[in-house]
Structure formats: C-alpha cells, structure tokens
Length: 449
Image (cartoon, rainbow, N blue to C red; front, side):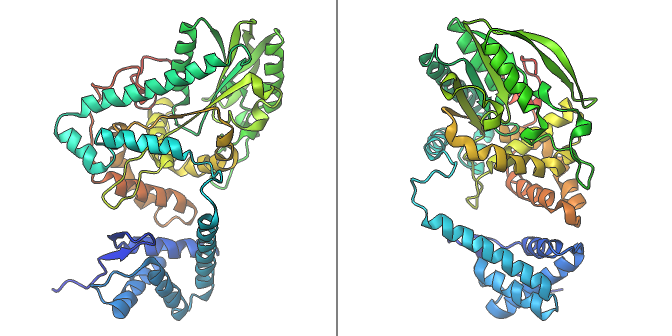
C-alpha cells in the first residue's frame, strides 16, 4: 500500500526549517476549543488531519509552508467544518500573540525585560568553549568518555560564581545585615545558600539562617482548585507579617522563636526554633520569594544583599531550540519530589502550572532588583535527568493528551520529550561529587536539606 502523502517540514517565523508535526496543530485547535468549554481531543485530531490534507492540496506534500500559512488554513478548515466559535477563539489567540511579538519588536534593547542578557552570553560562551552548547556536542563528549571532565568543569564554574558573590557581600560589610538567596523553584537555592555560607564563614562572619519554609500557613488555609491541588507557590502562602516582625526583632538583638512546618502533615507549630542575632552576625534567607517586596519590606535596602539564582542554560537541539530554563527546573523538581517528597513525577508535572504562574507574577518581575546573578544550570545534568525521567514522559503524554484541563502539562511533557529524545542518557552518577549542586535533586548529597 502506498504511503499517504504528508507535509515533511515547515518554516518558522525566524526562517528556520523544522520538521512538520500535525500534533501541534491538533493541540492548538484543542486549546481553542477548551477555552470555550470543549473537551473533545479526538475531534481536534481529526480536524488537524483535515488541515494537513488542505495544506497538501494547497501547497503540495513537497512544499514547506510557513507558520502563518498553516494558521490561515487552520482558520479556514475550522470555519468550513462548522466550528465557527472555535475558529473565532483561535483567531483571537493568534491576534494576541502577533500583537505581543510586535510590541517586543518595537522595544529598544536597553529596556529591562527581566532577562540578564550579559549573563546569558557568558553562559553560552562557556558552553561553546567546552563543546556542550548542543545536544550533539553533549552526545559527543559522552561517547568520547569525557563526561567526568565536563562534570568537574561545570561544578568548578558554578563554585567560582558562588565565590565571586561572597566577595561582593564582603565588600558591603558592615552595612549588610541580611543576605537573601532568591530564585524560582528548583534553581538550586538551598545548595547555593550552603556554599555561600561556607565562604562567608571562612571570612570570619557568623551566619544565622531564617528558614522561610517554616512560615507556611497550615495547608488547610490554602485554596484548592478543581483538582484538589494546593498552591504552595504564592508568597501569600507564607506568613509575611510574621517574617517581617521576626526580622526587625532579630536585627534589634531580640531572641525570637520561629515556627516549624511539617510538609507531611501540612501543619505548622508556632514558637519552636529559638533564634538570636548578635551584632557581628548576618541573617541568611533562602527563599523562593526573596526578591518579593513584601518578604522583607521592614528592612532598609542598604541592609540587604540580594542574590538571584536561575538555570540560565544554553543548550540547544538540532533544530536550534534551547532547553527552556523552566523545563530544566521542572526536570529537577520531578526527580527531587519523587525521592524527597514521595510524589510521582507526573504529579509534579501536573502541578507545575502553579509554579510558573507564581514565578511570572512574584519572582521574574523583580530580577532587576538583584545585586548578583548566579547561573545554576549544569550542562552535564541533562543526561543524568533523562536517565531518571524519560521513561515517565510517554505515560504523561498519554494521560494528559485528551484532558482539557491538563493541556499545560501535556504541552510541557511533549516539549521536554522531544528535546531529550536524541540526548544520550547517563545513569551512572559516580563521577558527580557529593557536594555538587545537582545532588540536591538526584540525591546522594553531602549536605543535609
């Protein structure tokens, strides 16, 4: 039987030629339908097949239609098949995306858009110098037996950045009394805090850690969504007034008792951990929302040093698509939650929309207030994470594909699976030292978390 004709490749807006994927058309149609209350994934897939045949009839199977041309055909097919309301939702979404792109294009480069471009350039240069800026490059290093050296080099680069951050803090002593390690979920805040603490201790400073996680309200006070999920990711899940009160009292030399939060029971107990700050000591805060103004609003800016940490990785696949920073952190959290919090990886994936929503609202907008930025992405971690997670992704794709309320999880799983598929997995982590940041997520760390 002759194989049915099919579009093989398309042209993206930036001119890149990439493989054609009907699944993406089906997902776009399904999302438009979901916005109107629809839930029929198979229908979206049938319509996507109709779109493909319309593309072949219009451009031929050998052609490489552009994204804009494909979207035009999607709109036409939806209207022809009687799905006018879905077509309208699709058109509105398309228009809003086009307007957003036009707005970005009109902005001068100098405008702060919460992306540390200079830092990203440094990361890319480092990756290129070490031959690990692409999936193919990583595969080549692994095949050549150079993976252990990449591990050593990556850890050395990260440790050097921590040392540089500590030097900046020392330059601002004695004005600085509070050091904040901030960053989005699974960026490596806890390990960074420990390593930074070690550097400052060697300089003769004594540190007192305020564990912000203990300031969570009881889980029963957190709102739930239609799935029964709790939202830990908003700063309002923390007792911000109590944090500020305790900071002021600590800097005044008073003794306080911080709460204790039990993640297994979802409850906190007040007045548990005694804490006091001597004049020569610093308060050290490791917090997801460290840059959020309400977290430390009672403390003058000159008394705070704010270090921001993010997985600013610069590794791209054959099509030129870079691993997204949030996807890198998602993989880390899926692994960590599995062994540390007894959560299945797919449960973490389904919950991730809360994480991203909070980051975009309460973390990303405040990057510009940081005094120093650390890149915690380690190119060598991707092969290790693939070995631990890739087997779960097909089940996630199958589980979330037709679930109208889980399209965010489906799209993320699909994107991550496509990126990791050609990457060589590395299951043996023996060459990773026990003090490496990645141990915070894969286990086996010398540190206690």
